Image (cartoon, rainbow over all chains, first blue to last red):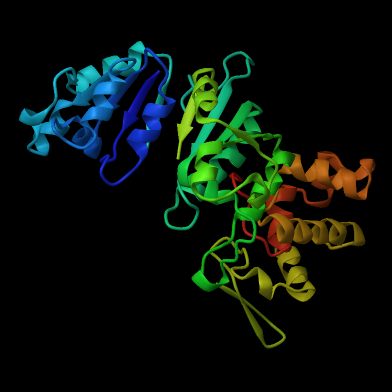
Length: 99
Length: 129
Length: 110
């Protein structure tokens, strides 16, 4: 399953709930304000690092660039562009949005 | 909905609706309820999940006269007549908000988050609100 | 739009549905029925009263499928089918009966 998160983890529990619900082998794609969860040294970096043990964490590069944080992304996060987003959707059986 | 989401050749698919927002601050809860009611006409295998603030949608005793909005909470009691009978509520979300199943206006199944994760995996389509 | 009757004004939307369901009474229901070409009989009122009660309890107008099932339960099997309800309200029990009952257009009704 592909999960998308579009809210900042600092103002919403969408990421937290998503990570609870994402079973092993699934992909979590950070989009829109959700990309702030990809920042290294942030208060959620530890949570993201832990999640990487069981799920793939990806982030939408244009959203990172738009927010001026493209150079602050922690290691291990898969960066995708819009066509990569489409590929992720097509590769999986279903997609769940965490709003 | 796209053809792919609806049934092909009469097969029944598992549809999950995830509700995570409190009822009156945003339109998500009401929109979700309306989609569930309309979608019921397709006679699919529907489950509703209430996570996070979504559990507040089901609290007893809602009275909206003072805020000029329609109290749509009684409509959850009509879901049974639409053959929408699988209502699952996150045990952790309830506990975090100081609520129990007795505070809710419909019969629900209270389920641990870890179990809900598995139930979502089994769905054919997941719709989020 | 509005309906004027006995010195009272009933506001309606562009499709003729009452805007305020609390303003509804039998007199305005007769007018709404006339506009729909429906001659109200006891059988019609039975369905209208049922719809008002249903709305009062659940805050929605039921889908036809749900309405027929519920009518069958409450008023008897011979009335709990769409043939009976369509005979009373030829343009659709949901659309026509809800309008006469002063309820909003049913959710999902096209």
